[in-house]
Amino acid sequence: MPELPEVETVARDLQRWVAGATIVDATVHWDRTIRHPQPSERFAAEIVGATIRRVTRRAKTVLLHLEDGRVMTVALRMTGALIVVEAGAPDDPYARVVFRLSDGRELRYRDVRKFGRIGLWPGGGLRSVGAGRGARSRRVAEGGRRYRIGEVFSGHGPEPLSRGFTVSRLAERLARRSAKLKTLLLDQSFIAGVGNIYADEALWRARLHPLRAADTLDEFDVRRLHRAVRQVLRQGIANRGSSFSDYVGVDGEPGENAERLAVYRRTDQPCYRCGRPIRRIVVGQRSTHFCPHCQREPVASETR
Ligand SMILES: [Zn+2]
Image (cartoon, rainbow, N blue to C red; front, side):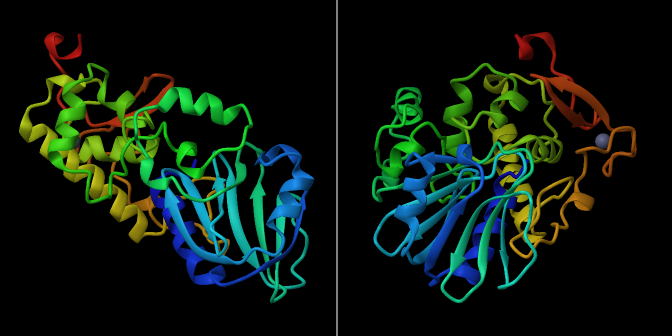
C-alpha cells in the first residue's frame, strides 16, 4: 500500500508531467472510485475544462489543485496508481478513471483492487487541518454533503516532514498516549502518511521495540524516533518509494526503496546492525518486523 514516500513521488512526478495541462474529457469506468460529487457523471462533467495548476500531497492523498481553486483528491489506498500515457497507448483494463488532456496524453487512475477514491472539492480550508473536530467531520464527510477540502483531512495528524513537526510536538503527543508504538505510528490521526513499511523501519532505526507503550519514552527515545521517522521517509522519497506489488510511479516504473529496507519483510535475515535474525510478530493484525536484540523488549511497566 502506498505510504507517504510513494504518494509524494507520485505527486512530484505529476507536478512535472501534468501541471499546466487541461482536462478535456473524463471517463469513469468504475463508479465507486468517485467519492464526490456523485453521481460519477456529475464528477466527469464538472472536471472537464479544468486546468491543473499544481500537484501536492497531504497524508497518503494526491492533491491536484485546479486553476479555478477547486482541488481533486486521489487516495490511492491499496493498489491505486496515477499513470500518464502518450496518445494512442493501449487500453488498460484496470483503468478506473481516464482523464484525457488537451495535448492528447491521458492521465489514468489505475486500481486493480478498487479501494482508491477520487473527489473533487471546492478549494480552501486546507490550513484548518488538525483543528480537532476529527471524527465528527469525517462522518459528515462520508455522508456525501458538499464540504471544503480542509474538512476532508480534519481527522489527520501532523505531516511528519513539515517544519511544525518538532521533537517537542512529538513528545507532547506521545506522552498523552499509552498505545503501543507500532499501533500509534499507523494511526493516521496521530501522524499522517506512515504505514506498515515505514513504521517498522523507523522503529528499528530508533532502536525502539514495536510493543513499547508511547508514554514510557524518555526524551532521548523521542529524539531518536523523531529523527528516524523523518529519515526513513526522506530515504523512501529519494528512492522513489518501495514497491512490493502494485505501487509504481507516474512513469509506470517501480520504486527502488524496497531493497534498501532494514527490517520490513526481512524475517530471519541478519540485522544490519548486530547480525542477529530479524523477527516477525503481529501487532494489531499487522505484520511487524524488528530486531529483538537492537530493539529491547519492554519490561512489564512499559507495556501496561
Ligand atoms: Zn540488531
